[in-house]
Amino acid sequence: MSRLPEPMKNIRWSLILPFALIAVGGITYSLWWVGVANRVEAAILKWQTDQAANGIAVSWDKLETGGYPYRIQVDVAGGRIDAPDAPRAWTWEADSLSAQTLAYRLNHVIVDIPGAQRVHYSEPRDGSEQRFTLNLTSDVFWASYIDESGEEQRLSADIQNLAATRTQQTDDGPVLAGGAAAGRLQLHGRPAPEVPGTAFDIALKGQDISWVNLGDTTWAGSNIAHLEAQTRITDLPPGFPDALATFLPDAATNGTKLAISEFELEWGPIEMTGQGEVKLDSLGRLEGRFQTSVGNLDGLIDALVGADVVSQQSARLAFAGMVALSSMQGEEAGRVRLPVAMKDGVLFLGPVAAARLEPLY
Image 1 (cartoon, rainbow, N blue to C red):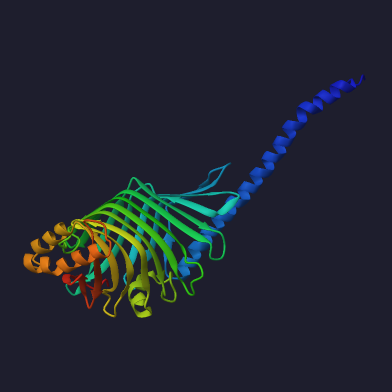
Image 2: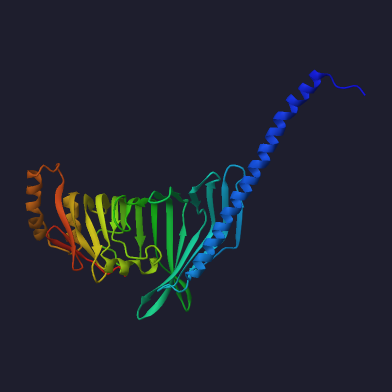
């Protein structure tokens, strides 16, 4: 039998070797990807078991893992979380949910909830527990979580064109009980550096926030055109975030404080910027003090007078001194420096008692 010439042998290996290396690399990567995907799914199942031990039931109609070859993607259909043993039982449901992470960077997870969501809860009314359902839809409902280990954690969320309707469950069936909407809501949070205890830095921004039939409408109206704030929350209660259902009363007991280093607010006649600090008093009402710069003073006075909070003459006299003082302090034209205080269940705009503050729980 004749042997192949030496040049033919070299040509054959030069053709085969690259394909062989690609095949081996592809098989190796595929096996590694499957192993990572299995680890992710195992972590989800372990989290489900851990929540059950805390009295919280996590379930879904279907859970699928995919995304090969570039990412790990977990798609959930019919997701549900039940907390029947909470001080006030609640349930969250979502039609669909997608979570993605890169196979080589599992510490960064992006969650997308494209479908409808529902929150079932109850609250005391007229001496009994009344059941409600909050129905949520949005064009975008997106969140990103990064955990670089230790204190290096970051959470971001972006919600666009949110619409919420609330229904009350009665013996005659569900009855519409108010609604709300927002053009856009954004949130960024991370653990506060070099702060003892549990503390977080939180930045939030909201545009075109409105609501109807969700409690009494204040004199400022029911539409917030713009809200933006840089905040730090400190002295969080022990057990946070495991005890979210009792967070507000626990925060009041523990003296939890929300320091706002900078905020902007456009709410009806209110056009305000400033900074300050707020907490909850022993009755669950907001308590704190802010230093603010207020524009549209004439519109603010007209709204207070129109709501019978103060008379026209009293309002003009109350704010006249502040206008003069602000000009002496160098405040820009058309703006007034106005202290805002919340004390004993009353909101004060300068010397004017503008609103009564109800307990938050």
